[in-house]
Length: 314
Image (tube, rainbow, N blue to C red):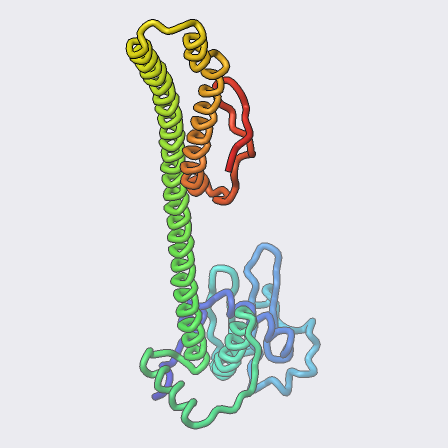
């Protein structure tokens, strides 16, 4: 199927600025085929030399070429020319040269587009299977060329990589968020455990104080009961013996003398100290365990009671 014929007006009405650059290039590469006439205050004019007279005009002096002042003779010099004015320039050419310009412009556009897109030409060898697949993709997506097909595949691949990176980034954020959440939960649990340990420590201290207080009260009650029982026993002895002599009375009094009672009291206090030490050691492992201390650590080898410090007995 052949391309539809384009008139000069149709051709210059699209991609006009790029065609102007193309005409500038033509005037530099082929000055014997097309000239650019620039006049201050007027549009630039591109004048195509009649190709049927190109050879005869090759040796023509450039100063004798038509300019804007002698434009009346152009139609006589170059018959059958076509002309079209754009906003910034005009082009006058013959039909034969116009066809050549259109073909050259396609190549210029191809190279210009590649240059703008920073493309370079590379020769590659493809097997039939790869080529057929590229052609199939080109037809399927109605792409203009294999170059467009390759661009399409690369863009699609880059898009997939971008989406993959987004998914990976999202998963990492979720993972970090979950990790932070787990850390916060662990810290919360540890704080709660510390609070429980503090409560347990207070409870242990209260238990020790209650046991020690209870032991002191029991010791006091024991002394009272002992004094009462000894007094009752003494009274019974007196009642049984009736009137006793002074020597017997002195012997009985010595039984309840201050030294004897002090010895009994010291013995009872030692027993109470042992009981206090026993209660402390008994509660110490639980307290150490709750606080994370060495369970085999023990207090020093002395225990202080209400009145004195005595060596701890084992």
